[in-house]
Structure formats: structure tokens, C-alpha cells
Image (cartoon, rainbow, N blue to C red; front, top):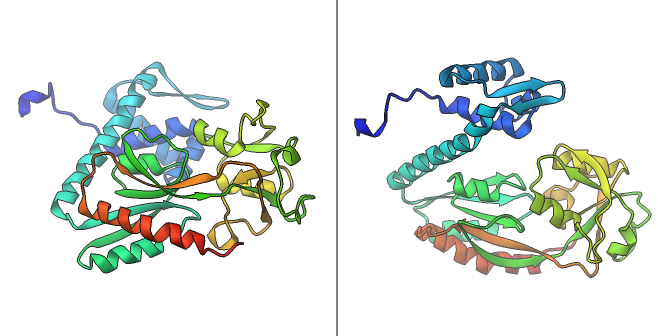
Length: 306
């Protein structure tokens, strides 16, 4: 085993994770917030990693932070290294605790009926749930942070097994004083000139889908302000600076109190899916899939309108 490596490897994975987060945000301040640390502490971590590697990974500019040439080479390897470490930990824990499952879900999706059914059917199993960011479903599965996910398409599904649970209408999200409030439904023509915000670091697939960009007639969706995350977007809409297309959230499941929704007519519904890692043969994952298919579409049919 000792011959498998050319020399003793001294690399702190926590420092590698810090580098990856800074690379994603391209800004030490935003990365420090994401890591729940201070900017000076994060700067020291990056310097320690650069000392371990004996290279400069990041260059600071007046506009933020950019990768050096060495950083560009190291980043994809660092991502794979963290993912492999996460998988090794998860697989070791699964071998020691085979009767455990963690179920991920995204905001506004109710999984309680299926979770309760699984706990009733498998009383000896340890069943956990985890709320995921709206764009984190695939990564959470591949990183083994969760074993199954209930989420909305679209997201990249290679290396995953995906089962559609039900269709969900898309709605227009507007401030309470918008001129369209009170209409039974609206069309894309009604909002042809309404600006729609972009979320920074958004997945291009998700961004195009929820902005409906391009529109069915080929025109691009109207550009709106750039925001940092979903909560910022809701605040921007509540202030009357934009509108958005989204899922039918209500105030109990994450809708900003200054917003309301209007049904969108002649727009394809989004799909709520059950997703797992391809080839996962866990009996608990299979059991939860069956409960999700039986319980969640039925609950959706009887869900009261907001």
C-alpha cells in the first residue's frame, strides 16, 4: 500500500474546501459568509493551502478574486478530491449503519406523508430529512450528503435515477400592488416587457427554465437586475423592480409576505421528481420511492390552493 503513493501526502481537506468555495464566489467576503467564518480567517486558510502546495492559487483584483493559472488546474482536481472524500465517508458509515437513510427535499415540497409511511413500515430504520438549496439536488446526491431527493426539475440527471412524481403548475410571482393582481390567469404576452432577475452563480439550465428564456416565439426574456440568491430576488420583486416565474409557493412554504402569485396560462408545468444515485440498491431507498409515488401525488391532488 505504501508504494501506491510517491510520497507522504500532507493536504488538509478543510483548506481545499475553502479554496473551492472562494473559487465559486470569486470573492473572499461572500465565501466567508458561505463558510460561516471571517474574511481574515479565510485568507489565512488559503495562504496555508498555498504553502502546502507551494503555488499561488488565487489573485485578488479590484473587482474580486480570480484563479491563477495553477488555481485553474487545481480547481477541478480539488472538487473531485472533496467528492471522493465525501463518498468514502458516506460508504463507510453506510456499511456500519445499513439501516439509515437521509432524504433531501427543496423548499415548498411536502414530503412528510411519505416519510411517516416509511418510518411506520421500517420502525428500526433511522430516517433523517434534510432541506436542500434549490440548486443543490444533484450535488447532494453525488456527494452522499443525502440518499434520495424530492425536487423540481430541471437539473442535470446523468449518474442519477429519476422518477416523475407529479406535475406542478408554474405561476407568476408579483408584488401585492402589481397591476395584474386580481386576474384569474395571465399569459406570457401579458409580461412580455416585464424585467426578470438573474440569480448570480445560477445553473444556466435552471435560469433558462424559470425565466422561460427564450420565449416560445424565440424572443429572449426581458433582462432584470442581478441578485445574489433567491431571497434577494423575492425582496427585489416585492419592491416592484421585477417579476418572476416560479413554483406555486404559499406563505407557509416560503413565499415572501409582500408577494402573491397568479396562474400562468399555456405554460408547460414543472415536474416534481424522486431522484437517487444510479445503481443504488438500498432497500430503504427503494421503499421510500414506493411511498413517495403512493403518497405525494395524492397529497398534491388534495392540496388547498393558496
